[in-house]
Image (cartoon, rainbow, N blue to C red):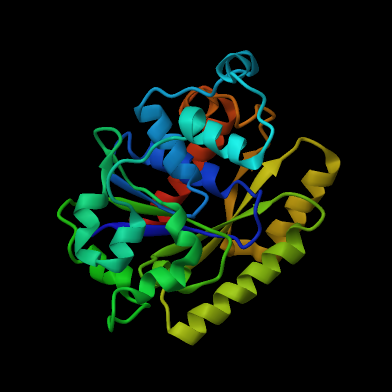
Length: 287
């Protein structure tokens, strides 16, 4: 049976989506992985679909060439984006699965031989309204119902969540074996970690959930402040904190090949960090 890892933090900018992509890519080198994009921002979906379609970000010079007339209104901007820059998504998505769980197999998109994607869509922004369309079915067990229809066998299912605390998050937590919380290494690390732990513990108690909770420190710089913060985090959170830390990478995510080159490249420093984290996860979950 697949092990389910939910990656969540109600704070943005902590490396949550990057972690989901990196773990999925590295796990899929040896095992069968389903990556679920549960965020209406669709960052995971856009990243993987761009790779599948060999899409590269346009340069400023290319965009200038594409613009025939000045973009002088919101309508002009939206029209230009839809025509030239938008990553078109074909087929079904997680939104369809929430309405009809039996559609899960139709919504899954193969990315590589061992990596599949259940894509997100903007419809997740109003997830409560979306879920209400399935009628009388219990709204908190839709993903459990969907998994019962899965035709493929996976070793791991990795779920990237949004920052929102809603019924979709409850659906994900109900199927989770582990909730992985990325915590950015800065002066607010301790308070941020405490807040998210309190939140997840309350949800776990209220909904009688059963998952392992673990923290991962991300965006660590090589300076005295971060070293001190890291040491304090280890002292406070002990066994709930993975020993692996994810170093800060200055390369921008806007670089079209950044993910492919730097995270999937085992010779890079950041890839070493994710490989170390992967080994810790396997040790904990494959006993």
